[in-house]
Image (tube, rainbow over all chains, first blue to last red; front, top):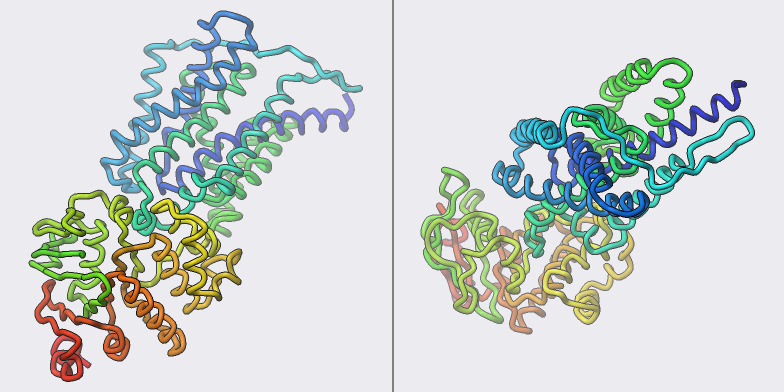
Length: 292
Length: 231
């Protein structure tokens, strides 16, 4: 294949990665932005989304598309519910102390991982894509499902943006993010907001996993890479900045796609980590984060 | 009527309020004065449920407030203008006002009434709160609290750092509210501002009200100002 089509293929792969990464990282960024909680269990919420998707699609009768559509609805609800419960039972009791919540979410990540190993098993299992459509370009064929993943992620990100900027719930979340004590003085139930935001963040990771699982397969250790890449994206974009998170996801996703295709995935990760180190040295607040 | 009866409050192991009692009646301005660290701000925060009350009671028209979670207190009609304004700086003026309106499900009528008190805010509705001048920020902080249509208004040093014309505007606004029957507790350090508004002055020291003066005695209150405030 010539260089041009090869680059196009790499960019398309990078776009798929960027879309899923943006969805996952926005969840992590929301949780940190509103709650000031560094959620180390975020990757495991991603994994749980994929595992629950396998159960739903495996046991639900009917055509694969219908089962997949059900997974898209059920997984974020189930994982979001688990997250809300974790928030109420654990994080709230720690009074959202930044250091204690890091330790708690590390513990949660092990619990989720071992629960998945126990009830789901050690094998990687495929989830059937809802449709098999091949887009034939002049130089190569490309999966129509992957393009659908990009479109779905863009729609979901648009929905998150509209939620945060155009709705009453978004206004309440932003007010809580800015000053939780003053928010309480205006009738905002901060505990409910925190539980909701934690559930929303986990739900976004779960829905990202459902979208990607027909491409990657569900496995109980699959949460590590999304967690690492989400942290890279959130640090580069600026902790708590949705705009920065989206831009950083595009940068990391595309560069990962291109470098992985032309060189190696390991080099892509090395360069992403180097970029994080440079951001931390020269612009610690990230590209769009507020100065401390 | 808001009634604080022998309340104790503490930050962890540090007790700040010790048996503090105070009453705010409808249509009256109760000024609270005292030196830094006397417990004035803690008293307001205790009323708002932000500092736990360990003894005594806080009631609004006989209904206990001290056992409510913090977010329930404003829904009973207690508006709070905190020290330093504590606006949601990244939100616009309109959004700050909307947060106030949402507290007690108030609508456009309340919003218009509040904005008519501060016409300058109406011109700045789409501006970020953090970009307003100090005086405008204070207007917004008071406007946000008034969006609750409060029966009790708590203000923590609202004239701090403001120019005289702004202090006059705030004083006139508070006197207008007083005429509508709002009970006001005003924590203030400026003696001139207090004398022009107060029906009562409560002098707080070491976490309790040491002395209370009625408005009829204010002209001869110099010894108390020197003793409790140092001016």
